[in-house]
Structure formats: structure tokens, C-alpha cells
Length: 189
Image (cartoon, rainbow, N blue to C red):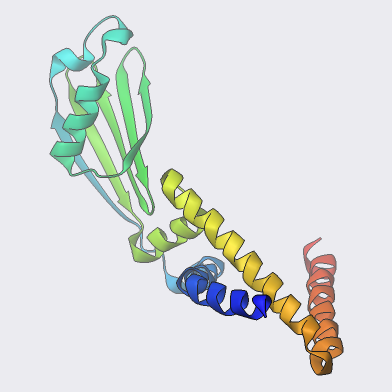
């Protein structure tokens, strides 16, 4: 039977990712118990004044600034923001459980950097939410959602083929849906 084969092998293929999203669902729902330890460090530095001191903001050396900051400050996260105003340049890098914010004085070339790390739990929680994870992880989340849907649907199809358990299984599924709605209607709405 095709639905049994699909259910078994889709379950096995998706086991790790479903397990990951189940565990991170708990860590997100009970963040106070899993203690997101946020660590913040601050530092100062100086970069080439010519990169930021041009009167024409179109001549600000964005690539050189970003690469210098990455190398000098051991930043591996993706750049999320680059802003230029009259007095300063600000650059932000973000990744799962990580942020680095840099403010550069355009007159002196000095900068202040604040790095924030949320630890292991912060990383996996951001992976669960898809926050600051990029396009590849977004595809992983979509594939996981499709696999979970297919596993659920093939499980339901299997239930429909088992005559002895069909009615009881459908009643339990209906009760699960009803109680989820009831909780929403009474305590959430």
C-alpha cells in the first residue's frame, strides 16, 4: 500500500527535522526555564578615515568597511543594515542568536562595536523562527512543513484503511481539533 510506504519513509526522512522543531517549540514556549543567556561585549576600533570621510555619501567605501569589520572583529554573520548620515555610518550584522552593531564616526574613523550573543538556546530558537537565517534555512523550514503535512496526511489515509480503528481514530482526531478550538475560544480569543 502506497500510503503506508510513504508514511513510514517520510517519517524517517523527516524525523530529525520534526524532532528539532518539537524541541525548539518547547524552548520557545518556556524561554524563562531554558534561560536565554544573552552576552554582550563592547569594543572600539579605528578604520581608514578615507573610507568614511568623503563628503559625497555615494563615495563611502561600503565593501572595504564591511570586509574590514568582518576581519578585524571576527564577524561571520550576514550584513543586515548599512546606514550613512552626516555624522556617522552604522553597520549591523545579524545571524541566529547573534548581532553585531557598529557605529563609525565619519570625522575620525573611530568606531564602537557591540556584539550580542544569545547562546545555544538563542541560536536554535532563531532557527525555529527563521529569524536572521537566510534563504537556505527558509527552504529547510518550508521542506520541514511540507514533510510534516505529508506525514500527517498519510497517517490519516492509513487510519481510513483500518476498518477496526477508523471510527475511533476519527473521533479522537475530531476531539483533538475540538479541544484545540475550545482552548482558543475560551482562553485565547
